[in-house]
Length: 223
Ligand SMILES: Nc1ncnc2c1ncn2[C@@H]1O[C@H](COP(=O)(O)OP(=O)(O)OP(=O)(O)O)[C@@H](O)[C@H]1O
Ligand SMILES: [Mg+2]
Image 1 (cartoon, rainbow, N blue to C red):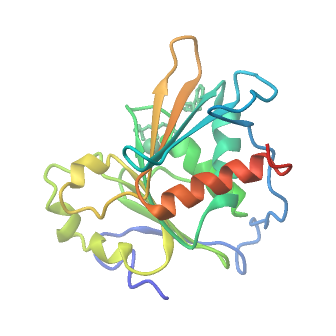
Image 2 (cartoon, rainbow, N blue to C red; image 1 turned 90 degrees about the vertical axis):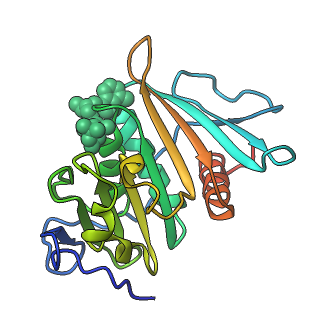
């Protein structure tokens, strides 16, 4: 389904086309290496600090959660690249974390994983940057500068959530209660010993499927 979001119409949003017409773009055919997942109750695989620990709760709160330690910026980028391989055609992701936690860096990796090799600007001033790709459209939002949540509706951003595409939202809480709910919540924190801690919380069936796919991609042998 075609999105009815028209970035630029109301607030001067950035729009970037991936693929034809962009000589800098390179399509990625192969999945990048992913940190290993470790399932609760299963044998720990190649235990390193970069392992993703994957835990599924289906009986109590019906949510899936996981976490990983990202030792440096490259780990954040490669995790974003890995997430790109697990995306369904439509997903809303809240990127939670303080200033400088790594939210835009993760988005940069995700776009790289989708084949985009151009510059990924923070949407702090434009509110949204849009990336159109033959496989999937990406909308990257940053609501840090909102003074009131109604700005979300005033800017017509609700239209950006219609139709297929992946929406990544920084500072989602500043657009509440108008923002559509997350399928996947990603929380980034500065780790006490350096790097970042990343926590994944699936909030819908689509989010759970995405996390499971990420797990499968990192363990093609089925571990
Ligand atoms: N795993 C990591 N370890 C150490 N530094 C990292 C890691 N991931 C990203 N960074 C660094 O954190 C800095 C801030 O990253 P980024 O701009 O992505 O943060 P942000 O969460 O989007 O911030 P803001 O809320 O201001 O938009 C960058 O210098 C980036 O290189
Ligand atoms: Mg940012």
